[in-house]
Picture 1: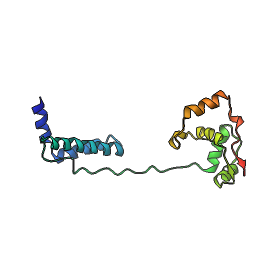
Picture 2: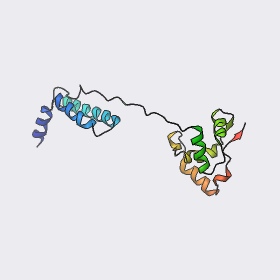
Picture 3: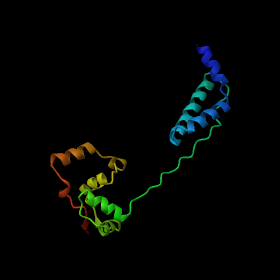
Picture 4: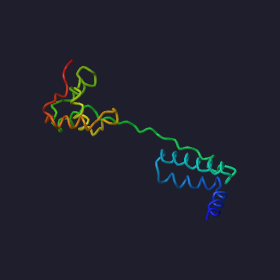
Length: 152
């Protein structure tokens, strides 16, 4: 069995790797593809190191360009409408004042703001979110307990 596997490893050509890559690109994201190319190269490098191969057929594979996602922010009026639906008393001009840094949002209100915008705070901060949530729940805090902004 080991002999059969060794023979197959020797028969893989650069063309086989290119065909694999073209099929793989149709199913997976660029980051998965790039990680897989690195893994494939490492496997063949290991085979070279053990004497099973003399060359790396995956060495010529090109990494896929990863495009940055375009960040689309809602307009001030849409943001104000979402906040009003969630129970905040704020207008488009209030959002404008926050954006211009003429008003500020309390840290504790940011948690609710993030909830309304469906933004996961753990993407930005290394905080113990369970502790924050348990603190809010243990103190029985409600949305109405928070002012969204205050004038500076």
